[in-house]
Length: 433
Image (cartoon, rainbow, N blue to C red):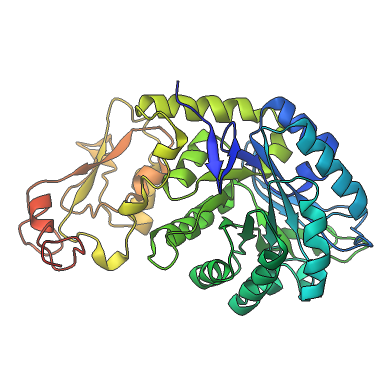
């Protein structure tokens, strides 16, 4: 079997699945249960100054559900820890003593004052924790106080605060990045320039979930008033993958170690993050929705996948997909695919025809010889993949590479062989470039 042992910034853990800084890591009781279940590591819920902040006493979460009531999007307005600093530090120390083989980072959020960092960083490191994660991503509550995303959205602030932390820290420092920016590269670069040993991303996305349809107030509310919160869960994974891949593939940031966060619910999600540049993954929403025992499926699924790929370790998977990510301008415009419907699997629901007829290129029949029948019209199909996306039957509609023929859009012969692409002027890997 593949070895799931993971190493991130020299910190070893029995597997690459860590709990993210969040309610599941708020106290020793939770973290102890997680480690008993088999989690490889945890990032302790964000610590701040004493006296601690006060959280709302009422609804803190909101969810978007699929038709079968699965949580696909999750929102929270909870702030950092509301427990005394000494209690947290004592529990962190005890957890690390009891579980020396597990990774344990401590998330921290402090004001933009160097003396404050000088006071608290040594206190946190004295617990024996393996490193510190700087929370520059939380979009609600704390950002109104000049912390969290208020720092993470300004590269100069990121660089400055990271330098302060590194000045007083002896162990690895990870900067947690906010997705609430137009370009994640400047913040990542600023963290690296400030001395960060790595980055983690993404933190949550600014969001309001819905309104209460009876009262016509936003939902959730506290005494009739509400505030935007942080959005997470499976729905944010594509955004997180994009940002992870951007950092991993660009020359100014590609050397930065990455811990991937955002919608990891099963082992396939972990494969996505690892192959696109992350060295490990952090999980929050799935643990809150399903409990800590999901670690069994995460580890067994990833182990089986690595075995199937003849990979002996997690490290062999990391960054495998990064070379396939490029800018749109470098895509092979000579390459053509068409949709094909497997008539043996087709249940005649007609969804492919409806969406293609109304929103695409009218490339799927509705009837043939007077009978209900759905089939792709090659001459009209542009290979957009919409029919594949809406088909309720797995593998009923697939995309096939067309190696010859005429492009119905131009009337010209299709030249889609890879040999053509090796000399195409848009190919950044062509000979002589």
